Length: 135
Image: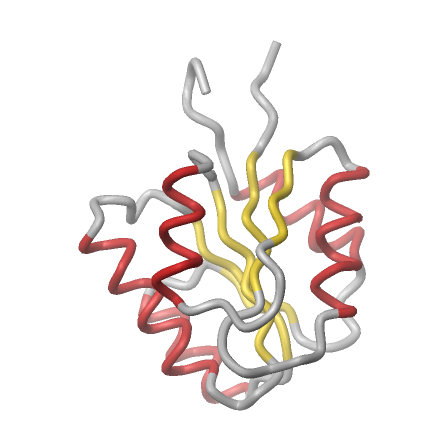
């Protein structure tokens, strides 16, 4: 039996709108994944700590505040510092096309823009996030 994919869904920064993050978290859970939703106003440090404690395979960040470059960069730095760079980071929100390319160079695996379907997100996670043996 294959282990279930574990995803931490988080809302970093001061953004107070979490409907989309909750919709994605529920869709991933309904698709059979283990999901930890961290709630609003999380720091990158809290998000990475949660992902490590929960033995997460992936982190999904939802950023609508415009601070996506700073927040994603910090999460990637912290994962590297904590020897957890194998955790796949993806995200969504209002992120300009030019910034998406830069986020990809930082190591962010995928960015979903407004209008992305939950089915496309589930399909991407299943195709791009693997669970270690014995997880």
